[in-house]
Amino acid sequence: MPSPVLIAIDASPASTGLLALAQRYCRPGEHELHILLAIDSTFAVHDTPAPYTAEELEQYPAACEEQRLGDRAVAEAVEALQGAGFAARGCMVAGQPVEAIVAKTQELECELIIMGHRHLSRLGRLLDPSISAKVIDRVQVPVLVGAAEGSP
Image 1 (cartoon, rainbow, N blue to C red):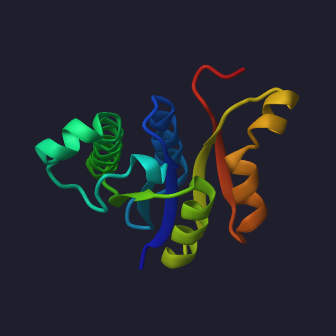
Image 2 (image 1 turned 45 degrees about the vertical axis):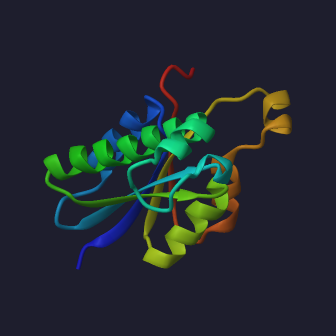
């Protein structure tokens, strides 16, 4: 039975690098890859991908666009990994990234988490603590952290 691996992405170009890391360190047939994208619950219009009503598009244009971008990022990541021969699934959840990543890791009994990291200054870390550091502190599995594209 393939071992589950969680890949936590966002809708940024850095997600491509995380997929490359997964392909480098995981093997088709040995690992089942699970893509997770957590969006702020204020931008979650639907729990699952569904067409937006005219009312939703009018009242929540930014939220609809944010969710549409997230859905597309997950679908593209899954498609890319499946194209590389992996068993891959994806989902987008509304909530705080740390809680979503930890919960999904436990739910799937993942053996590894792959996620990104932004290089922040000390002040930046103080004002906006690292999601990857918080995840590392809360899980009992290895976390492979890839630098965001364009980082030093």
